[in-house]
Image 1 (cartoon, helix red, strand yellow):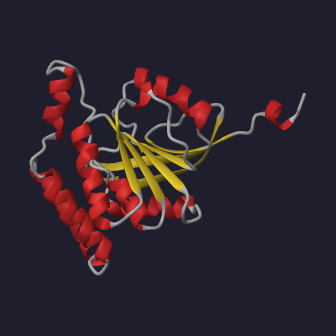
Image 2 (spheres, one colour; image 1 turned 90 degrees about the vertical axis):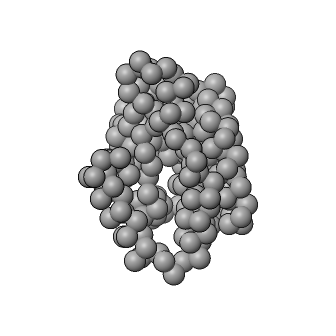
Length: 215
Protein backbone atom coordinates (compact mmCIF):
# COMPACT_ATOMS: atom_id res chain seq x y z
CA UNK A 1 0.00 0.00 0.00
CA UNK A 2 1.32 3.48 -0.89
CA UNK A 3 2.51 5.82 1.87
CA UNK A 4 -0.28 8.28 1.09
CA UNK A 5 -2.94 5.58 1.47
CA UNK A 6 -1.42 4.40 4.74
CA UNK A 7 -1.38 7.95 6.09
CA UNK A 8 -4.98 8.57 5.00
CA UNK A 9 -6.30 5.39 6.61
CA UNK A 10 -4.34 6.10 9.79
CA UNK A 11 -5.96 9.53 9.98
CA UNK A 12 -9.40 7.94 9.56
CA UNK A 13 -8.67 5.48 12.36
CA UNK A 14 -7.40 8.20 14.70
CA UNK A 15 -10.52 10.30 14.05
CA UNK A 16 -12.68 7.31 14.94
CA UNK A 17 -10.58 6.48 17.97
CA UNK A 18 -10.81 9.96 19.52
CA UNK A 19 -14.55 10.25 18.88
CA UNK A 20 -15.76 6.69 19.47
CA UNK A 21 -13.22 4.92 21.70
CA UNK A 22 -15.61 4.97 24.67
CA UNK A 23 -18.36 3.26 22.66
CA UNK A 24 -18.39 -0.48 23.34
CA UNK A 25 -20.02 -1.27 19.99
CA UNK A 26 -17.13 0.46 18.16
CA UNK A 27 -14.53 -1.55 20.07
CA UNK A 28 -16.45 -4.77 19.36
CA UNK A 29 -16.69 -3.85 15.67
CA UNK A 30 -12.97 -3.17 15.32
CA UNK A 31 -12.03 -6.38 17.11
CA UNK A 32 -14.45 -8.38 14.97
CA UNK A 33 -13.24 -6.95 11.66
CA UNK A 34 -9.61 -7.60 12.58
CA UNK A 35 -10.36 -11.13 13.74
CA UNK A 36 -12.46 -12.18 10.77
CA UNK A 37 -10.86 -10.42 7.79
CA UNK A 38 -7.15 -10.03 8.38
CA UNK A 39 -6.34 -13.04 6.15
CA UNK A 40 -8.42 -11.95 3.09
CA UNK A 41 -7.17 -9.94 0.10
CA UNK A 42 -10.24 -8.42 -1.63
CA UNK A 43 -8.38 -7.38 -4.78
CA UNK A 44 -7.02 -10.90 -5.23
CA UNK A 45 -10.51 -12.36 -4.83
CA UNK A 46 -11.91 -10.04 -7.50
CA UNK A 47 -9.08 -10.78 -9.93
CA UNK A 48 -9.61 -14.51 -9.41
CA UNK A 49 -13.29 -14.06 -10.23
CA UNK A 50 -12.99 -11.70 -13.23
CA UNK A 51 -9.49 -12.38 -14.56
CA UNK A 52 -6.28 -10.34 -14.24
CA UNK A 53 -6.79 -8.58 -17.58
CA UNK A 54 -10.16 -7.05 -16.74
CA UNK A 55 -9.89 -3.26 -16.58
CA UNK A 56 -10.71 -1.97 -13.14
CA UNK A 57 -11.71 -3.73 -9.96
CA UNK A 58 -14.91 -4.04 -7.99
CA UNK A 59 -12.85 -4.11 -4.79
CA UNK A 60 -12.72 -0.39 -4.19
CA UNK A 61 -12.42 0.14 -0.47
CA UNK A 62 -14.90 0.89 2.25
CA UNK A 63 -17.04 3.61 3.79
CA UNK A 64 -15.58 4.21 7.27
CA UNK A 65 -17.53 4.34 10.51
CA UNK A 66 -17.77 8.12 10.91
CA UNK A 67 -19.03 8.51 7.35
CA UNK A 68 -21.68 5.83 7.90
CA UNK A 69 -22.82 7.64 11.06
CA UNK A 70 -23.11 10.87 9.09
CA UNK A 71 -25.19 9.12 6.41
CA UNK A 72 -27.52 7.71 9.06
CA UNK A 73 -27.85 11.15 10.66
CA UNK A 74 -28.69 12.70 7.28
CA UNK A 75 -31.24 10.03 6.42
CA UNK A 76 -32.87 10.59 9.83
CA UNK A 77 -34.95 7.42 9.63
CA UNK A 78 -36.76 6.17 12.74
CA UNK A 79 -34.84 3.58 14.72
CA UNK A 80 -35.97 0.11 13.70
CA UNK A 81 -36.10 1.08 10.02
CA UNK A 82 -34.44 -1.32 7.59
CA UNK A 83 -31.30 -0.34 5.72
CA UNK A 84 -29.95 -2.54 2.92
CA UNK A 85 -26.37 -2.32 1.64
CA UNK A 86 -25.90 -3.59 -1.92
CA UNK A 87 -22.35 -4.84 -2.26
CA UNK A 88 -21.80 -5.03 1.49
CA UNK A 89 -18.16 -6.16 1.48
CA UNK A 90 -17.04 -6.77 5.06
CA UNK A 91 -20.41 -5.52 6.27
CA UNK A 92 -19.15 -2.39 8.03
CA UNK A 93 -22.05 -0.04 7.08
CA UNK A 94 -24.60 -2.69 8.06
CA UNK A 95 -22.87 -3.40 11.36
CA UNK A 96 -22.66 0.30 12.21
CA UNK A 97 -26.32 0.84 11.32
CA UNK A 98 -27.39 -2.16 13.37
CA UNK A 99 -25.37 -0.91 16.34
CA UNK A 100 -27.35 2.35 16.12
CA UNK A 101 -30.69 0.55 16.41
CA UNK A 102 -31.55 -0.10 12.77
CA UNK A 103 -32.27 -3.41 11.09
CA UNK A 104 -29.57 -3.99 8.48
CA UNK A 105 -29.34 -6.34 5.50
CA UNK A 106 -26.18 -6.73 3.45
CA UNK A 107 -25.98 -8.34 0.00
CA UNK A 108 -22.48 -9.40 -1.05
CA UNK A 109 -21.18 -11.60 -3.87
CA UNK A 110 -18.56 -13.46 -1.83
CA UNK A 111 -20.01 -15.94 0.65
CA UNK A 112 -16.81 -15.88 2.72
CA UNK A 113 -17.54 -12.20 3.44
CA UNK A 114 -21.16 -12.73 4.43
CA UNK A 115 -20.30 -15.66 6.68
CA UNK A 116 -17.68 -13.69 8.56
CA UNK A 117 -19.74 -10.51 8.75
CA UNK A 118 -22.60 -12.57 10.19
CA UNK A 119 -20.30 -13.87 12.91
CA UNK A 120 -19.37 -10.31 13.83
CA UNK A 121 -23.06 -9.33 14.00
CA UNK A 122 -23.76 -12.26 16.31
CA UNK A 123 -20.81 -11.44 18.54
CA UNK A 124 -22.00 -7.81 18.77
CA UNK A 125 -25.60 -8.86 19.37
CA UNK A 126 -26.99 -6.58 16.64
CA UNK A 127 -29.79 -7.04 14.09
CA UNK A 128 -27.83 -7.48 10.87
CA UNK A 129 -28.28 -10.22 8.28
CA UNK A 130 -25.93 -10.93 5.38
CA UNK A 131 -26.91 -12.68 2.14
CA UNK A 132 -24.46 -14.08 -0.41
CA UNK A 133 -25.14 -13.76 -4.12
CA UNK A 134 -25.31 -11.43 -7.09
CA UNK A 135 -27.80 -8.66 -6.28
CA UNK A 136 -28.63 -8.37 -9.98
CA UNK A 137 -29.93 -11.95 -10.05
CA UNK A 138 -32.29 -11.91 -7.08
CA UNK A 139 -35.06 -9.71 -5.68
CA UNK A 140 -33.83 -6.94 -3.41
CA UNK A 141 -34.85 -7.31 0.23
CA UNK A 142 -37.54 -4.89 1.35
CA UNK A 143 -35.91 -1.86 2.96
CA UNK A 144 -36.61 1.76 3.86
CA UNK A 145 -33.30 2.89 2.33
CA UNK A 146 -30.64 1.29 0.14
CA UNK A 147 -26.93 2.06 0.23
CA UNK A 148 -25.05 1.57 -3.03
CA UNK A 149 -21.27 2.01 -3.23
CA UNK A 150 -21.38 2.44 -7.00
CA UNK A 151 -18.05 4.21 -7.58
CA UNK A 152 -16.40 1.30 -9.42
CA UNK A 153 -19.53 -0.28 -10.91
CA UNK A 154 -19.37 -0.55 -14.74
CA UNK A 155 -22.11 1.29 -16.64
CA UNK A 156 -23.75 -2.03 -17.51
CA UNK A 157 -24.01 -2.96 -13.83
CA UNK A 158 -25.43 0.45 -12.96
CA UNK A 159 -28.04 0.19 -15.71
CA UNK A 160 -29.20 -3.25 -14.56
CA UNK A 161 -29.25 -2.23 -10.91
CA UNK A 162 -31.20 0.94 -11.64
CA UNK A 163 -34.01 -1.12 -13.17
CA UNK A 164 -34.28 -3.10 -9.93
CA UNK A 165 -34.13 0.05 -7.78
CA UNK A 166 -36.76 1.73 -9.97
CA UNK A 167 -39.07 -1.20 -9.29
CA UNK A 168 -38.40 -1.91 -5.62
CA UNK A 169 -36.83 1.06 -3.82
CA UNK A 170 -38.04 4.41 -2.50
CA UNK A 171 -34.86 5.90 -1.00
CA UNK A 172 -31.28 5.38 -2.21
CA UNK A 173 -27.95 6.76 -1.04
CA UNK A 174 -25.61 6.09 -3.96
CA UNK A 175 -21.90 6.77 -3.96
CA UNK A 176 -20.82 8.86 -6.98
CA UNK A 177 -24.02 8.06 -8.88
CA UNK A 178 -27.08 10.18 -9.72
CA UNK A 179 -29.74 7.76 -10.93
CA UNK A 180 -31.92 10.14 -12.96
CA UNK A 181 -35.71 9.81 -13.52
CA UNK A 182 -37.83 8.67 -11.79
CA UNK A 183 -35.46 9.62 -8.96
CA UNK A 184 -35.30 13.07 -7.40
CA UNK A 185 -31.79 14.04 -6.31
CA UNK A 186 -32.27 15.70 -2.91
CA UNK A 187 -28.72 16.43 -1.79
CA UNK A 188 -25.06 15.57 -2.26
CA UNK A 189 -22.70 14.98 0.64
CA UNK A 190 -18.91 14.71 0.33
CA UNK A 191 -17.53 12.27 2.90
CA UNK A 192 -14.27 10.44 3.58
CA UNK A 193 -13.91 6.88 2.31
CA UNK A 194 -10.97 4.53 2.60
CA UNK A 195 -9.33 5.73 -0.65
CA UNK A 196 -10.06 9.48 -0.35
CA UNK A 197 -13.46 11.15 -0.58
CA UNK A 198 -16.68 10.37 -2.42
CA UNK A 199 -19.94 12.13 -3.18
CA UNK A 200 -22.93 10.47 -1.53
CA UNK A 201 -26.09 11.23 -3.50
CA UNK A 202 -29.41 11.12 -1.58
CA UNK A 203 -32.25 10.26 -3.92
CA UNK A 204 -35.95 9.66 -3.48
CA UNK A 205 -38.24 8.15 -6.08
CA UNK A 206 -40.87 10.59 -7.28
CA UNK A 207 -44.46 9.39 -6.85
CA UNK A 208 -46.12 7.64 -9.77
CA UNK A 209 -49.14 9.80 -10.75
CA UNK A 210 -51.06 6.75 -11.97
CA UNK A 211 -50.55 5.03 -8.62
CA UNK A 212 -52.17 8.04 -6.96
CA UNK A 213 -55.21 7.87 -9.21
CA UNK A 214 -54.22 10.73 -11.53
CA UNK A 215 -55.33 10.45 -15.16
